[in-house]
Length: 386
Image 1: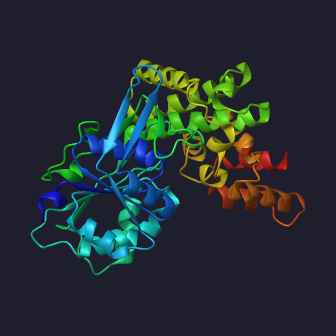
Image 2: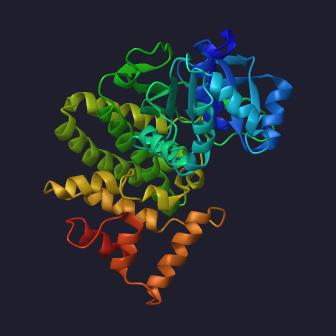
Image 3: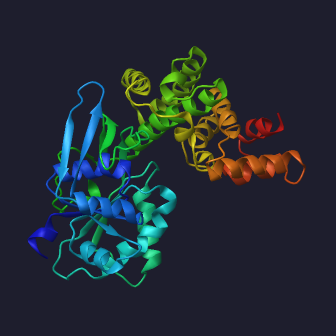
């Protein structure tokens, strides 16, 4: 394994989150950064420039120059991608949970080509999903079941948090982000592997951090978006400035906070402070994020273990009544955006229910994964019948 390869990070997803968050922290940790993406023009721009700037906004903001970067068009130059993975130290992703199965075969091939004496490749999926790296590992095994992973690769789940809004036109490769960020990585799978990322936090138990972030930041953000659309707001900052929307998000986060405190033993005052900090983040006027962008992909956000159904189901299972979460789910079901295929599909499916071509019960089970007999089921069915 070459010296350059020993300090290479291959990151799948050269979009705003990849460049403005994960790629930045890997660069600042001293890795040679290689982006892999199917967006040919974006990869060509990265290779032409070899650098970009991350522009922070809000308290404590500063600018970061990311230099010495390159890109690989993963759809056109598979051999170059396999070669980089075979010599890399780290592979990360920020592509969306549903895309992991498409990048897994390339990672599997790169692992298969690693030299016998090479240290294990560190693989981390940096997605807004619980245990996304475990899902990626399953897809890698499915792609190349004959490849023995022990000794060749290690897989660490992560929790990631940084608001990266839609970018202004004409900004090029530069990315505007909020100043705050958090990257939490589970340590046990990495025992015996040398990995230093100063901007990340390594913990023995990741579960509480993942759920704290998902059920606070992601649940809160989406709640503002869906209620904001109904209130006629355009941006997240405009939406949460409306007293009714702020009341809804605080009610939702009150329910998820109680769940997190009871489940993980988080100090109630600490969680309350975390909620307050994130409400302030959502009001950042320097992040002109739209409610339509944050609300996109409602079917994914309404799935069984995501930001709404996941906590609402657990609350119902323990005898609670997640009334604010159910209201947020109702707002999500009402989300419409002609530019979002999932929003269009959701509307079409609801139209089919209203036309009598599908029952509300079948719709709820298919969309949310909650079936008859679950304590949350009647409240969800009532939303569709309303």
